[in-house]
Image (cartoon, rainbow, N blue to C red; front, side):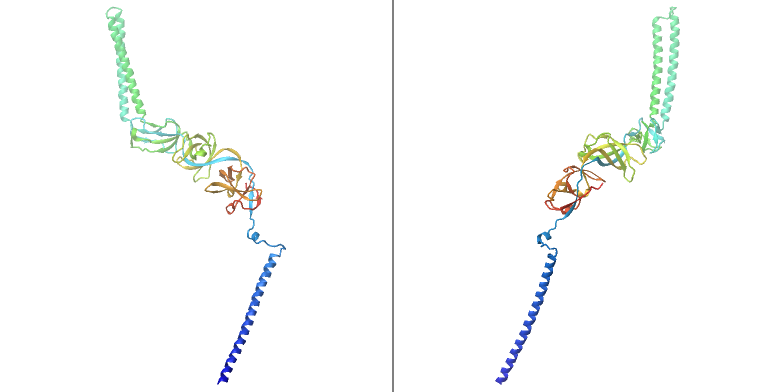
Length: 394
């Protein structure tokens, strides 16, 4: 029994020893394989790192110097153009209403869009009552003239009899006074008739000057009077204007006689005009003023319409940059310039007119700087870059 038990334990021990040897050899093999792979990776990394023959600086490879495109704008003579918007209107709009006592309208003789002459009748008002009054006054003139003739005849006879002593000098003076009074009554009657005729004539609603009829707000059969308001609106001479609204700074640059190009909304056609008046006041609410641009008559220009204007305010010798070079933030407009040390620096600028050719720079640049053309939003002040010069797009 004891012999068998001892044999069994010895056999198990040898089995365990054999298994430990196998595991140890397996671990050594795995460690050798892992070591070989690591060595291979190190060798490959070293090969690529030293392939150029120069050691690679880890910090320099992590931070590459960017290349940026720059322009040197120089200076050029550009037109100082101010853009504005506003409404079209008649330069001299004449409201026409009832000048007399009024009455019922019998005829309206014009339509909007028609040209009229000075004094031309636009509408007529019923005048039957005024006509009868005029006839009555004309008859009173005839009566007064007859009385004046009788008084003159009596005076003539008295003058013949006074020399014979049949009539006293006092009687002659009395008949002279009667004759003069009769003549005065004739003048009064004529004046009354003239007044009536003038009143009747005022029943005709007439244009005060030659021009273009803009609106009509009366129809036959309508009763009109002094309280009826405006019945017609006439643009004197057909002259039009643009009421261009400008900010304070732009308005200060406006002068009478400056040329402007006006384009109505919805149209590609532009019309030439010039400033004929600059508003002397600024609206305290909008902080804007009005520059009035005179325009010739054209059927495409309609009073009340909206239009845009480009006003030429002279020429200036200034740098001009593409829009991509100019940036802005809460501090204002700025550009990035590259100095002699190839470092980026921020430069605040004052922007002028923006046109198809670029942005006019009124201050901050002299035109000889290297200005970053684009991608300025990815740069930081003080950063080192490699500048590549380009020409300014025209």
